[in-house]
Image (cartoon, rainbow, N blue to C red):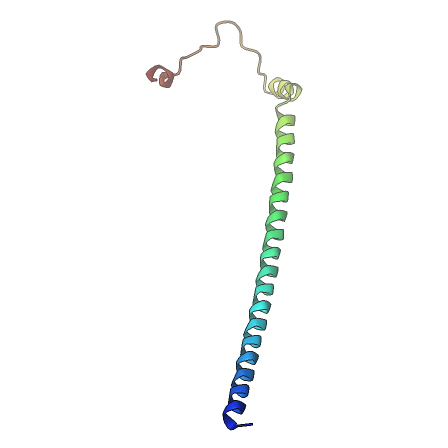
Length: 99
């Protein structure tokens, strides 16, 4: 074999090894990025689920506090009574007249 063809094979071998190394590093980097993204997505999904549960609990608590019998008990404790005729005055909305 001539020295020129030996140098060509050696150069091709070195280039293919470098390309293989770069491809391997790129694959590892992409795998790490994918794992990080999956972890972030799982954390965000957990956060969304926690907020959904909290919201449903708060809605239940609001409905319980606004129940008619609870409001009647609170009004009785505060000596509040239903309004008699003439005690309630209704006012028109000034913003509605301008439209």
